[in-house]
Picture 1: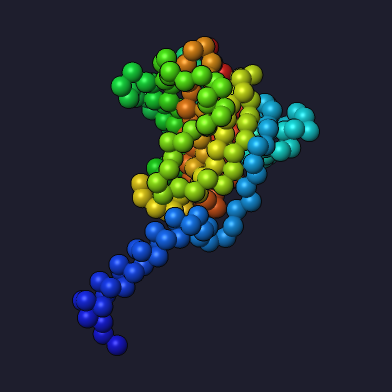
Picture 2: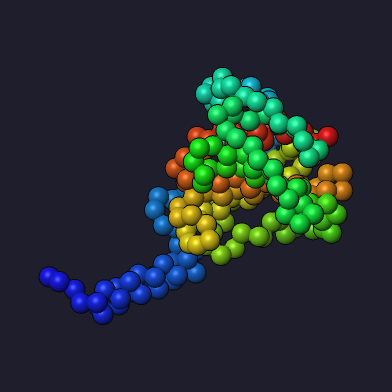
Length: 209
């Protein structure tokens, strides 16, 4: 049966309204993801060995694949970290903030570090409110804490459903304050691939100079 232009427009508008209703009700689309609240994770070594019982709670358990992969070292903007040698690093400025982008060949899989001078926010406020910059088009599934270079950091996980983020991607934010600077880290990858990506290589080796 051939649909008229008016019928097609009605179907499209109806589908968009349904997506908005689903998002506003926080109804997950697709397979559910197990989220954990208030999980505390300790530092792990980049080689991928478990260093404590708390490390077993990590959302990203290091795998043999990431332990054996080739890595390079980035040093700049007051930080150092290891990253997979098949990935690339680019730096930029956003106002007064330094931006570091670590990405693979897939442009939608990346880790971003934003270094904010004089953030005007205390660690207490950060602990209480977290990073609420991801709102439209993303549904929070978990939050917790980890330690980066000995500093307690606050972590949130989201699943994106609508613009401005890609459809069905997992997004993680990690924020902490050290040496009067705020470090805002954002990780993104397709939902089904997020745990497989070697983000732990970068996070576990990140040092503040």
